[in-house]
Length: 229
Image (cartoon, rainbow, N blue to C red; front, side, top):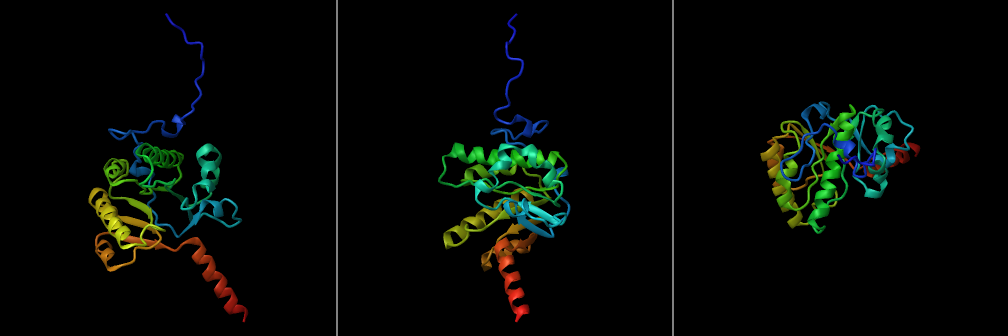
């Protein structure tokens, strides 16, 4: 009988993130159970890099990662370190490591997996989550959506993606597929969906919009300036 000399194999690909998960049929993305999804619409949303240094009470605040990847890469490297931090907040919007359509397909899938695996991990640790819908090229969307619970709350970020007429059309198709596949009760939108072409979606589900953090800060500063006069 062969006996391995290795008593412990290092978990180099962080399999612990998806312990006890079920997986999609082809790419084996971890499936997010509906029981992990928040039943409460966020009062406010704050980016991780601002929240982690904040002295405020964050119990009414969902934390998002709509920012350059390097600002929250530390979570990917050592997720267990941040469990206690997220438990001091209202919850977590699913991760948003960048997925660009001009990336090699294998890289798009890797980023999609990491976003889902980290979201699953924190949800399993009893932190309310809102799955973030971030996908690459269109053909990857159906299986990605099969990892997201239907008839629940989801989140999407639109900043920098709907400037041109072509990108608006692509977003329309993207949202149409999401609504057809998931029938979400609420979509938390970090950004905007301007234009009459999006009005149809407002009749089909609840859309909740949140201003960018910097926009809110500028408005507060302007109000303070007016009061000081």
